[in-house]
Image (cartoon, helix red, strand yellow):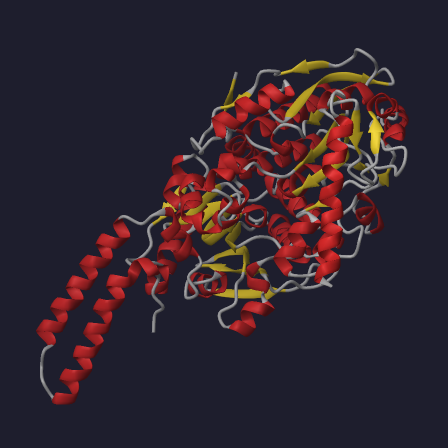
Length: 320
Length: 282
């Protein structure tokens, strides 16, 4: 059973009516399939209507949806085979980050990504997708392997934020993020980034510096969670409940981020969001990855690196 | 218990007006309260001690101008891109007003100053953040100045010295601020490829998006005593995880103990160390 978000309330009501009608007619041995089909059509229209005018805050909720597909869901659907590797060879293994290699059709690729958990136990084990230094260092180890073997890197980004517990500070959470940024900016192999859910600040960008940055339609990318922004700034009366306004001001939705020149491509999600049809989403991701890799693999390494540098070099808004 | 607390707070409030009465007619800047031990410090003496509390050793924050005077050979600093200012890419609520106010307060166009200077007669590229400007937060301007400083250092093959402080990426420029983490660090990676040394000095506070990008990947890191350094400040961490941190968490000394910085040096000792380093790193 799908969980519904507040802005989906009309859809939830309609769903209830349909389910009720189906149960009732089945019990009575009646055939009302035409009526039910009409209601389904109406539901689809309504979904289309609601999803055509989502606010940034609605997208925040979709990006955090408990049933949204996570990195490993896409990995298993997109790759022909995938072998996960573990540990940073320094301290430990961070379950909030996955890394490994697999086959994208015939092509060997390295995959890294944040990983959230599905049920409570797994969510805690994966630290809600908040990576620790060893997670970023494991990802870097995998990416350097990709560089060594000449395999492209695909990164799935989905994190609320990096872990900032004292243990993470002790092991250098800041250094690990900075190091990844430095290494990814000069990694001598193509790097593709797909933001699949929450692109949460420094924790996200530590896996998001690449040659082609994609966002799923309802994912978000932000310098700070909107609720925290609202609490800090007097422009929102330091009131967490004004998070929706902060979300709008931060322009964190996929389309807005693309308009700002930060993201190269927005991948349309199936109607109602990726969680309504994970298979369809995965095949869109797969097709796009193949197409973009075909393009990037044509470039020689120096040109690739120069373009990557200039791509980020350009992002800023200043004058005199 | 509650009556005791009440008494204590009553004593506190009774004290405040007295101090106000005593201090009436005294210029605002004659006495400065130490952030560390709350002692009232005579501002002329404080200037002589480089804004370090003589009682408790607390390092009070410096403006970019004070910091530059402290570090470089006298009169050698030539500022670049003085007037670079943000274009408010998100049209963020009240941002333009804030910028104008901080501009007036600090005399700086944004939270970063960079230029050319000499230290011990050795030509360097210097960047210094201005904490007084929106908490030293990093938006497009700091990002651009850090990138330009790193590129200039690479071209001229002169060491890069950055005084890093600030609260992190600036919210008012949203995702554009987050991208500054990527581009500044990419510039440092290029500087490393050019085999030019990069020295960072961490001053209180040095946090979040600034810490987790160009700052912590410096070749040599010098931190000031007691400076709060980290991905998140101690108070934020205590609130977020509902834990109590031991005293001294996320300070310069904490990071020294965990191998994350090279040295913690009193303010007075930083310039002599830079002179020595410049002499070795030819």
